[in-house]
Length: 403
Image (cartoon, rainbow, N blue to C red):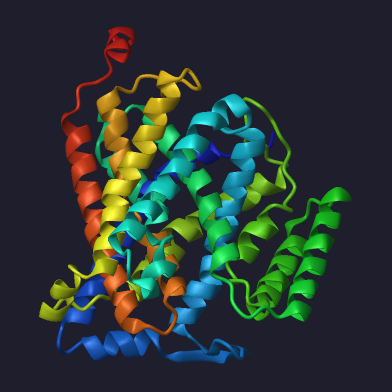
């Protein structure tokens, strides 16, 4: 008898929580190295070291920073794409009734932070391109904080947060593809479309071996890199072509290529790629100039977008949907706990740092200001969300069922 793999969702929640700890440690190490007088130059020399050929004239020689942000993060986005496809075809978002509330919450949770950011930075036309920085939620950090709360956070809240973050990831990918793409190379774009069509054809022919899909993914990544579309989008596109065998009620079939690939790659994404990303992007020099910059419009816009915009958008959308009988709130979760979860969605570390670098390419000062705002908004959101959930009374209906 074939061994049946453990639940992808349980593995996902466990690895995201553990990965969040490594991400915190990696980001902390980067901050430490960037601020030690003897190590500051070492840190920047390390992440800017040339370790590969010139794959794109626009990017220049490949550095450690580029390999992580444009290469390894494509694998992270591959995992994101696999999770999106699995959830929509064979998981918690497989019906419109299940999708309705997470989709509404995620959309509002992206729109409101952008509105808050644009309101704070009004009159600063050079900052407009950063509107999407506070729009995304860092699922690793958010799930990590929930994990620290143990059973004080009901399981339904963790699952709902996961669903919101998955829809949020879809929005972030669309934003990157539509708004942070420059200088299109039509020949490379056509080549990428041809590879994508080939991968789709393999799926339609019933090819279940993963090797040709992975070769196609590598080729699609390279052509996407040349095309001007951000290379990480190739990960999500390739994921959409991976075959899946839907098994409602037991969605971890041994003979499903998508589930096999997700189980194989997700630990590498959670425990290696995301911590590496945090290490090469979180090195912010904390000096008097930087603390002064936290009051700059860009930093304040990002911080307020994450801390205020996220909670207004997500909690407001859930409250309105429930009051208007559009959807039911997560079972077993009180309104206070839902508000605490909405605060945690303001943790925007990974994707916000990623979008910040795309929004202001070559503008080191603005990228540093964006990092400051991301750290400030994410820290406030994590602290407030954890405190509220730590002391929130459980839902009365849940307590009655447990008694």
